[in-house]
Image (cartoon, rainbow, N blue to C red):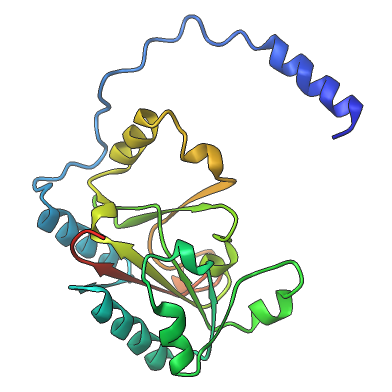
Length: 226
């Protein structure tokens, strides 16, 4: 960092007085979307209804073996032979790398030196920080080994999600982060809320999927705790 830049940032830090007249944060925020059933089954049902209403796809499987089979089926149906993935420790499905290799699907993780190879990937595979039942959304953050390209570049995006990461609302997720003193967010460089496949209606109000990102969003939910 240059000396001039550090001086400027230092002056900005010293000048912060906060907002002394701002009201205190409430103990609990009023949720934008209300859920009648916040049981595990109720959250899963609502998440599925909301995401499928946005033309996303939800596949609920009982265990890791079934999840592996489901991922392979989705890739076979789309004809994908190259997958851009997060680093394996960040994907909540042990054995996925081996299973993909067994069926001849090439995998790679994005680096500054392999941009052309990434552009050839037909599918992206990632995990997610959380899923929001009320809106059918996915909370996805960026960190080393968890690059954005896997969630943005390929036309097909497969998300592996443990059911325990399903929350009622975005407010509930924010409350979790506050309770953790934002420790998790402090390790992340970017945060996205993904709600359905990429879509636009800029041209004559005709809805088109996949213009600015994946046209297919497929979430594989593994029931039970990890």
